Image (spheres, rainbow over the protein chains, first blue to last red):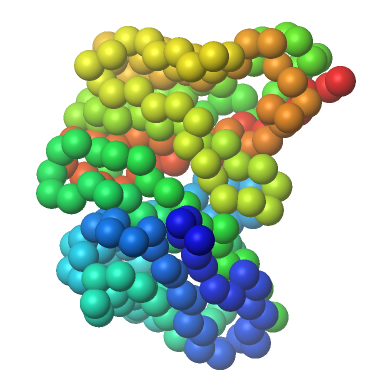
Length: 117
Length: 112
C-alpha cells in the first residue's frame, strides 16, 4: 500500500520484556517521527529522523527507549525492560519535508497498541 | 518548548449545528498549525492546516482561523454530520523544528 505501515498492530508484553516496533514509512519520505499516545491524550513526540540520521531524541522518556533507521527507510522503536507505564499506542509518521522551514503534511500509521502486564 | 492547549475536551452538538474547537500555543515562532481527525482505533488524519502568513482557510464545511497576536487558532465545522464524530487534535510546529506538538484533543459527538 501507499500509506505508513506499522507492525505489529497489537503487542502484549510481560513487565521486564523487551519489545521492538516496526514502521514502514511512505517510500521517498525523508522525515520519520515516533509519537507515544496514552489513552485519551494527544500524541507526544518521542524522536525524529531525517533519512538515517536521528536529529532529535529529546522526547524519549528514558534510556530504555531506543530508535533506529539504519538505511533511511524502515525504522524500529525498541523498548527494553518494559514497564506498565509504557502501555500506550506508538504512532509512526512520515513526511516528505527535509531541511529547515517548509513544513509539510505528516502521514500517520495506524499505530501499535502496547499493553504491558 | 511549545505548549498547546485545547478546549473543550468534549463537545456534543445536534446534526446540522456548527462546532468550534479552540487552541492556544505558547511559542510565538510557531508557523504551521494542522488539525487532525482521529476516529476510534484509527490513525490521525490531516483535515486542514494553516500557516502563519494566513489568517483564515476554508475547505467546504471546515474552516480554520489563526490569530497570531493572541496566539490562538480555531477549527470551525458547519452543518455537522454524524460522520464528523471523532476526536480532533490541533497541533503546532515552531519554525526550525520538525515535530508536532499536539493539543489534548476534543471528542466531538454529533447527535442525529
